[in-house]
Image 1 (cartoon, rainbow, N blue to C red):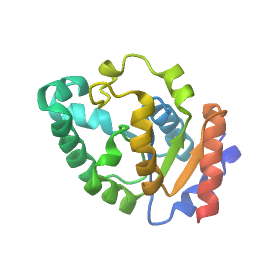
Image 2: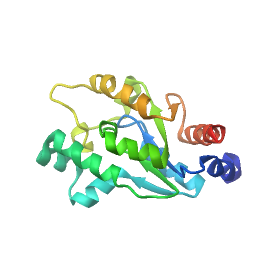
Image 3: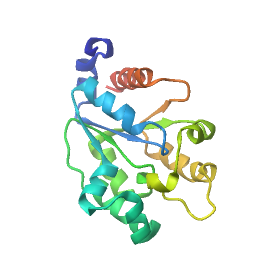
Length: 183
């Protein structure tokens, strides 16, 4: 499998930025793709939402309830800005792009990849947004959230992968091929 993905060349192409950060909407597949990509590259997998939960000792939705949206975003920004990892694939929460310090740090230490999906596809995949710990303002829809976040994803991304009609294996291949071309 490794030779299929040209792993050695991909890792060399990453050069100084030897981490990969995945950004995108909730349900875009960041964690699922991240685990597979980490296995293919021989990297560690880091889920920043799990890091937040571990540090806070609470689930994301509990943090949002306790701290409010803004308080949660401050915690998320702080945790992501402090990540110190090497040879890792980092899957961020969908709201990570609101944290300027975090995104600046992630861009310094990694190649940032935006996994883009249509609103319709995301709505098919998403379950209970509250239980997922999604930061939504009252009355805000997924479409509204996409309109706010998409420009931020585009702004911070070194690479955009249109994942609309791709399975996990195809997304990982597209990422590894694209990373080789960056180097």
